[in-house]
Image (cartoon, rainbow, N blue to C red; front, side):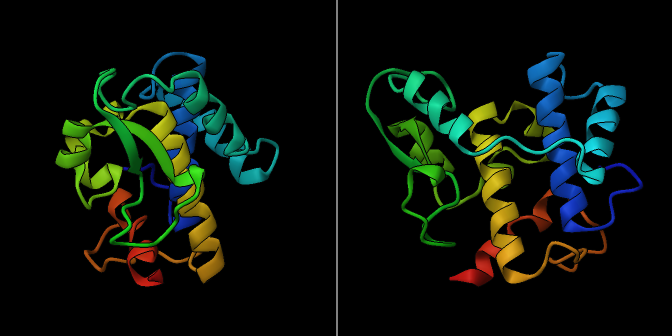
Length: 168
């Protein structure tokens, strides 16, 4: 569940990105105080998400391991946002994955695959790329200031992929 001040897709992406920053900075994506501090800075524009180039540098550094499980055998390119939802064949939408993780993930985005129970386990490189791509896609479609895109009565991580599904 997001913080009470999270009312739009833009807010939700900033909130999730603030958790990512907390994980990278203090080693705990659940550190509420730090997450709230980073979230407020993202919202007021004094802090900006890093360019996706950061994740692509991480990808090159870890090119011999699955982004999801760390396996080093049977690696192949995996689309973070599946091609069944939107065709983004750029490096920005790809990570190395072993055949098993790639097959298990299938046509789901990282939040769909991990689910709410395991969302804090989504690897940093995957989550960073996903959030930046989701922000760009929502920005292009004009839905950053929308809420509850999937119509389930709440704004949560599953609303982030809605724009992806309709962009095809």
